[in-house]
Length: 155
Image 1: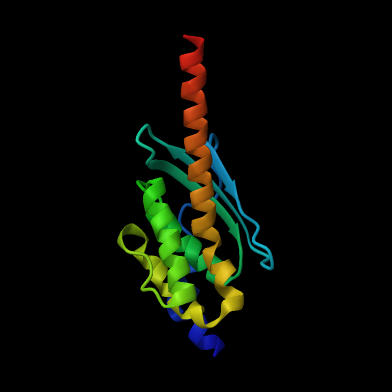
Image 2: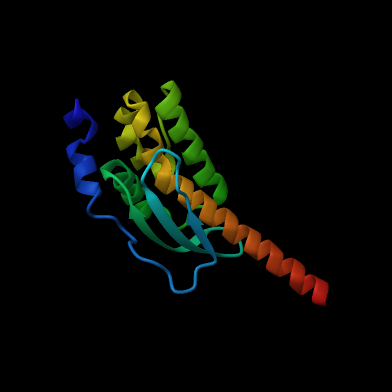
């Protein structure tokens, strides 16, 4: 049972997380601490004027499932937009809770966590990286909007 959950691909991704660390000047830091989960992801992003992630770093203290998800997110985050990340998050939820196929496009790699659907207690830990990325991008977008409003108001 546990061997089915922690596949070879998950065990490979977990210790080899891309984009590990922190950014020196992030625009959007995201921190998610899911209830009932000991995972603690911190995601830093920088976005461009079109809302695309141009720089990304993450510190994820999580179980192998959370780290594997962070590995996929780390490979796919650069160039992603809020709608893409939100669609991936929604597809992950559907995959885990209602038999959906999982994310497509740049976040398709998250499908490696499909077998987690059979383990509801592990759903939250599988979602931490994509949720933290989405939160960081939303904070960065809000910062950009607030900055533009302040500049326009000062003019």
